[in-house]
Image (cartoon, rainbow, N blue to C red; front, side, top):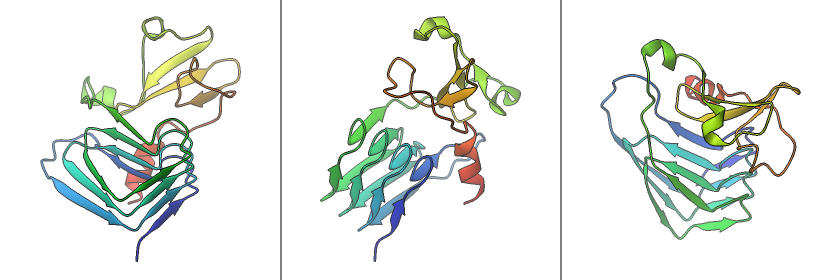
Length: 168
C-alpha cells in the first residue's frame, strides 16, 4: 500500500541536505503514493547524494511545483501530474551553501539590487541555501520572488526546512 502526503504547510516531502560532512548516499523508492494539496512543492528533492524513483504516484494541486529537483537524481515511472501551480517537475542546479559555519547557522541577507527586488523587499538565504523574501511594511515573508508572486505576501517560516528534518 502507498502513502498519502497531503495538506502540508510547506513541502509535502522534503529531502534537504543539511550542513555537515556526511558522505552517506542512498536510494528512495516511493510506489503508489499521493502528493497532493501541499503549500509549496509536492516533493522537494535537494540532496545530491540520493537517487529517487517514483512509481505509479500521483502529484497534484501543489502550490508551486509538483516536484522541485535541486541536485537529487529523479526517475518517474507511470506517474500522474495534475494542476500543480507552475511546473510538474522543476529542475535547478544544486549549489553548496557558502560561507563559514557561523553563516550557515541562520539566514543571511542577499544583495537585493542584483536580483531585481521591488522597493521595501529584502532577500535572505537559509542555511540550506533556499532563498526567501521579506516585505518590510507588512513584516511577512514568502518563498516566491515578489515579481513572480501572483498574490499578496504570505507568512512562511524560512527555518521550516530545518525544523521538518529535525522531526524526522
